[in-house]
Image (cartoon, rainbow, N blue to C red; front, side):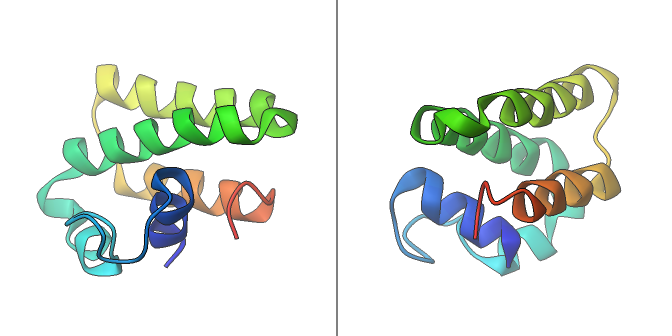
Length: 92
């Protein structure tokens, strides 16, 4: 569900507003890690403009996603990024 909250908040839409904004998409992420990580990266970049006070932490999270792009995708790291965004009130 954290993935849905990230997407909805970043893209100002409701669950299901886009095909990738639902838990089913994230649950199937193992089939499309690169695509899902790209959506997360875009969402965090958008949130950085909305949550200026969290910019440093968002930069840290986007750096991890960018590193994955270069070094290989990892679902557990993607889960860790989402959890850190939630725990630090970037998303609710």
